[in-house]
Image (cartoon, rainbow, N blue to C red; front, side, top):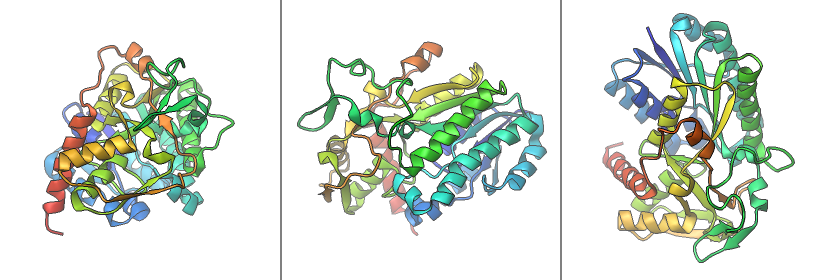
Length: 357
């Protein structure tokens, strides 16, 4: 029996992994205790997505284990043992601002939880491929010191800089920079995953995501940029832009495209490898540009205001360079551009909002 184990299985990337891998593995084991609701309130709850997975995929088995508790994980890993061929670890506390509220919780989930999963893998299924969703925030605010140029709708890097053509590569330093506590806990986890590959020879891979997005995101004010933005466009709820004149740039990768990266890595893993993973030059936007697209798709004028106070450790301009991954896995490419992704988010969000509470 071939088993894929997915943490954060009711979240955006976790649920996309369940759907994608459901046709490729005999059993999908999902671990998710809906801590996203604890982090972000009712808007962040993933219960609706957990129910959707259970109703849709007959080979999906859900566990509400807490990744901070080794004894809870040990029961699951013992049950499936070496039948586990893939672990896709997406569970996390994902917000800068929230991390500062509860540093112990943030570090326990992001760093200790990752260590627990790595050690369970090493003990019970050491030949499994271990895929980790890291973040571009491991680079701290180093990207903010790149030579940036202001245009009418965005910040852009100077066209003479090496990063102009494809974006930021994996050689940007993780050191001597302000991360936020969230960024720091993800750095710890990122390095741990690398070391279990390099030191123990396990088949681990790190994917440093840009903005991860898609129609199954439970977007909230503190996390889920495009999802929450579109929700505000549909409902008329107020949206606040934090700093940088609303011209801060993010690259956005559809959840399906990211999980397809995971699948390519699974088939030919390179132990301890690190990849930037985002929309690159193919799919990116500033806040102002994203608002314009949301207004066009929804047909509504957005209700938003501007705050001069930017979020600590936030990026002014970040576009991922995926050249390294594409050189290792040349058959992979993006499928969904920004317009297609936002249209999907709109349709999914509108349908959910129509459902009775």
